[in-house]
Image 1 (cartoon, rainbow, N blue to C red):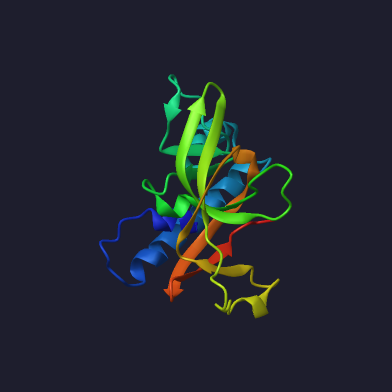
Image 2 (image 1 turned 90 degrees about the vertical axis):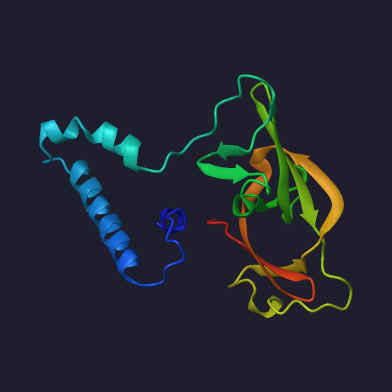
Length: 188
């Protein structure tokens, strides 16, 4: 639901009426979905279920290959949308494994998404670690709150990886002294 709310243009109005309307619409949609799954749902309504699901349910899957090899601004992988930083910053920041043998994910930002045939790769620039002597105020809250402090600058290291090596998106907030907190948004 948060994803749907973020996509709605509110023209910077603050208030509760819009949120209430959206919440009620979300609950009504959920009630309708539940009703469509009941065994006693009328047959005529069941025939429209596929259209309803295709129209109003989140689409899982992976983006199809491009007609011609090259860069792409967005890429859907296993139901998750990824983008270049210049296209959509929020969909570009992620935790990933730099190699298939790595056991610790690192944060980075997608600079390019390249497709060749049926293969797609992410070109990711790594976030720099904290400078020596800088304190990570979130360390005392781990593992219950999986936030880490990094430099808000990037390293010169760029990794080209398969989308399967991405762990999750990250939320990022720059808070002080060229430091940014990165929160792992992994559902696992």
